[in-house]
Amino acid sequence: MAILGRDDLRNQLKRREFAPVYLLFGAETYLRDLAAKTIADLILADSSLREFNEIEHSLSESKIQYALSDAEQLPMIDARRVVKITNVKVSANSNKDNLKEEDEEILERYLARPAETSIVIFTADEFDKRRKISKLLLGKCVSVEFDELKDVELVKWANTKLKELNAEADTRALNLLIGLVGNNVRRLTNEVEKLAVAALPDKLITYELVESLVPNSREISNFDLTDYLLAKDKMRSLQVLKKILDDGAEPLMLLGLIASNFRRLCLSKELMQQGVERSEVARIMRLPYSKQKDFLETARRTGAEKLSSIVKKIAETDVAIKTSKGGGGTVGSRLQIEMLVCDLINLG
Image (cartoon, rainbow, N blue to C red; front, side):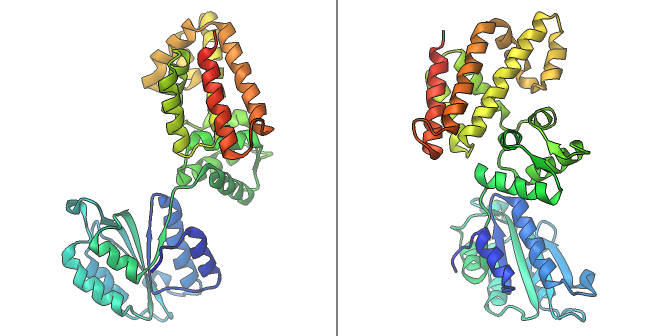
């Protein structure tokens, strides 16, 4: 069978088309687990005895034959039961597998004739599609791969969650949030919920609120980029920039991270000039421990005029991207970021 995407599964479920066996896998585990829950919720929506008809077996603790044996049992009173088989591992290294070659016969027998009264949902933590047992599952199950979301998709997800919470965020705040969190939907969801509470009573999430409350999971690469820019190391600056962009960061959001970093350099320098202790500056600026010494040393030795010029260049690039100067879309935006990096390296 062909491997489906999230939208394909969503459309099938909207039509209430259910398969006897699902295989859900991929890097985006939050949406994978949410899909498994949604399938179970739809199947057991009218169940009066859900606790008896929703069974879960973790292959970290149980064996596949016990799970499939439960799937072959008739549901209690209801028309169908759901059997979730979680923590499936079929990895490149067979020593890590918990679905093994000796399980193939019993698995193949069940998949050839799935129980009509059960819906079985496999959720895989590791899944090497090249393995023989993986090909068996892919050939017999409705398989859905959950790829990591791109930044544009993350913005859409965050906006959906904000509407559910009757909250809102301006574009700058939302871009910064995605830039800080990265492509972890589970964490993004948690941060949106946290920000919605922190933004009470009006529930308007601002750039400053995001900056003050959300830790930066993409921060280390961004710090490295700042270091290389100030060291005028063009090759390494462009290498780090390429990695961040290739990892899925949207250029405008990356620009926001760069701006935030240089803004913190400016503020750190000002605080140190006022005599504030370095440890207190690090606390106020919320610097990662491993980067505190280097970051504050960079702030100390970099002239205020140079930092001001850098911030001005970043603002000009922001305008250029938003007005599609030099070309629109991702390609044009990426080019603007690359030009900015070269300009900052050549800045006196």
